Image 1: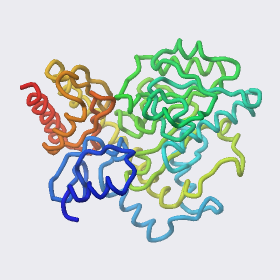
Image 2: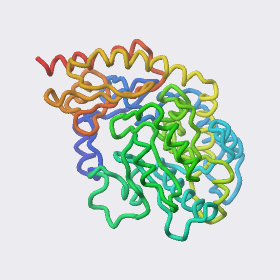
Image 3: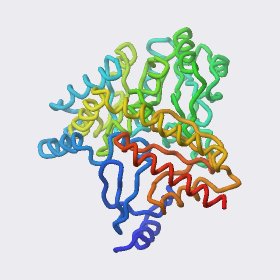
Image 4: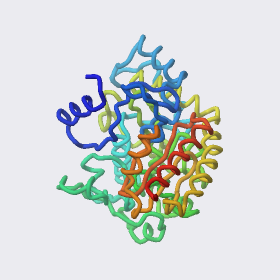
Length: 403
C-alpha cells in the first residue's frame, strides 16, 4: 500500500466504524507538525484531544521512554518497581494530594473515581448500602464504558447500550442551584468537567467551580474534577480548576499525563478519601507500570517548570483574540481558555466537518463536534507564527464558503 486511499479503504473494510476520521494517513510527527504517507505536512491543531500537550516526540519524554524501555516495562502491581514511588510522590505533589491511584485510560480513571466516591460514601459518610448517588452534568463526556455512558446525554454515546448503571443524577451544567436541588442524604459526590471539551469547549460561568466547591464542603460530599482534557497545562494553568483557585477532593487525570507516548491515567486525593481502597478492591495489570511511570515522571518534570502553563496562557490570548475577529465572518461564537477553543461555525455556511476537511486540504488538522463546532487545541509547543497561520487558513476557508 502506498496511497492514502489504499490505507483508508483497508482500514474501513477491516475495522469497526466507531470513528469517522478525516481522510489523512499520518506517518510521522515532530513538535506541532505531522507528515502523511505521501509527504504532506499538517499543523496538528487537535493534539490527540489534549494528549499531546507537549508536542509530538518531545525530547525529554522520548528520552525517558527509551531509557526505561531498555530496562523494565512491566512487573504488575504484584511487586514494587523503582519508578513507582517517584511517580506517585511527584504526581501527588503536583496536585497537592497525599495519594495517587494509577490506571491506564481516562475512562478507567473516571471509573476509579466513581468507585472510590461510593466506597467513601459507605465507609466514611455512612450512606446505606447500595444507596449512593453521584451528581453529574448534562452534555458531559467522561468516557465510553457502560457505567459512564449510563449518565451521558449524548444519544450517540448513550442509546442502545442498556441496561444502564443506576446511581447518577443529571443536572444542568453551570448551575450550582441545579446541583443543590439534586443533593440528598445519599449523595456522595459531584463529578464535573471544569471545561466541557467534547461538548464544544464549554466554559462555565465565572464563580461556578467556586460555588460547587463550597456546596460540596457544606454538604459533606466529594468534588471530583475530571481534568483529563482540561488539565496539565492546556488552559494556561496546571489545572482548569486553578483559574478559580479551587481544589477538588479528587483529580481525575489522563491523556497528556502519558505525553502522547503511552496511556497513563490516575486519580489523586488525600488519604481520608483514597485510604478507603484496600488490597484487592481495585487494580489494573498495567496501571502504574514502569514505562508509564517513567513517561509520566518526565511530564511532571516539564510541568514543574511552569513554562508550558505560561506559554499556553500567552498563546491562548493570541489565539482567542484572532478567533474573535472571525465572529460575523462565518463564525458565530468562540469559547475556551488557553490553547483550547471551541469555534461555532454559522450552520447556514457549512458543517464543522466540511470546515475541518477544507482546513485539512490547507494543511491544518482540526476536528468537528456536535455538527457545527470545530475544536482547536494545538500542542503547547506550537510557534506563534504557526498558530496565526492556522487561524488565517480558517479565515480563508470561511471566505471560500461565503463566496
